[in-house]
Image (cartoon, rainbow, N blue to C red; front, side):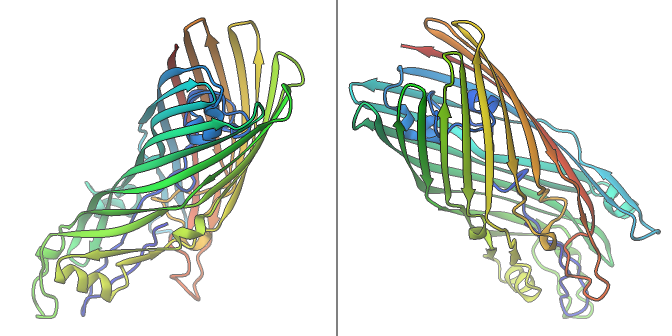
Length: 427
């Protein structure tokens, strides 16, 4: 989470430092349209190619197949602040569709199964017109954050017995992050931007046990993964500083930088129960160790940038995120031999505390409903999924005794709509 802070370089320069995040932390629910339609309650079922993400042990015993899918994510965010009658804020984020998607392939031979997934496990963004926050002083400037991670995940699973399977996936992450926000100073409004990318490697381990044809259970463990990001940052204010007094020396507009970001450890357990031939009910509990993202630090290569950012503490931002447990429930009903309808729900508590919440890190306690449809023919199958995330409004106070206690007082609210469609072939 990014905190708006004031940096003073001898005389006065105000510089707000930022980063980006997802609707809630760094995880997307939309990995595979079938799981999407069932609320992501998929760890105990894991019976299509997206098992590579949810529980790789589920690959064992599956019919060999390949599937590609597309997902669109649309956030709807608002920010209101009437604490200053001279500048009442009633802003809405720009409407935008963020596309994601992926490809899963799995092949079964005897007790062994092999798979390859290329997918987006994390990614979202938000854009605001800065003049809606700072009135006309910031006309033409923007707040923007976009973050994404693409995972290339080869996987293997082995059926130890007819009931028990183990699976392993290696996750090769490519992370991307862009951010922009205005820089306010006595000289007017300028723009800060940064763009970076990087790689990291993690592991997913899964186990699945079929107690009977009606009941199965699974567990999944994803290691935390450090992604080493590097890129360029730009501040259009620095070259404009007047060098009067000399301590207010101008500097270069751009500097390269590096920052390590950790995708947190993830542990999940789930069950799948079939009370009848037509109905399957799933239930998951998923734990994310968001506290691993307690603090993020940037190292700037340019000495001027490094001195400026370090002097005000703006080379760091404290996220202070808290670990969270997500509860998911899903259902699938076969309406015919070849088609099914799906429903789901999940509860997702906010990882970000009041102190660090701001408009580029919309984090709320969410209640989400999902639905889906599936067609499975002899060779071709199609899956559709949609979800709507109802974000709970957060009212962040202003503490006059400690004005910097809260990063951005006011009322924050965000909903998210997502949809996915996948087409696959069995062989």
